Amino acid sequence: MQNTIKAIQNAGLDNSVVDDLVHESAALLAVQLEFSTITERIEYLLSERYTERDLIAHIQSKGYALKTLEPGDALSLGAQLRDAGIPSDTLNDLIEETTSMTASSVNNQGLHEQIGYLMGAGMTPATLLTRCGINPDSSCTSPTSSNTDR
Image (cartoon, rainbow, N blue to C red; front, side, top):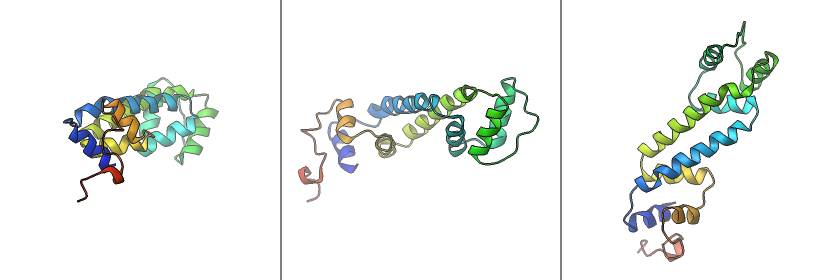
């Protein structure tokens, strides 16, 4: 990761060049979650920023009457929502908002966090450099080709 950061910096670029890639990656995550189960959606939202009460309030704001919703893990919450006939796409706007907020937060933390986020999302260093307009073959992306360790 350090070599990727150095290659970007050596090209005279800063973290702003990676901003759009982070937002694009977050948007792709939102699309992936659209095709996931309601339990997976709940797990994501609970792990990122929401409480069970937040999710219940959101679902109720969409016009769904929840007489009772037992607190529990994402699996039991998902089952309760399915049993109540609440469609999984009820959470789409929360997912889009959350992924966008995550991308903004990552972008505000600087280049190191951005690169870590993108690599964690599966982007390879070569792809990242190419998307930044840098030829990965001519940059120092591997420890063996770096002269910075001297």
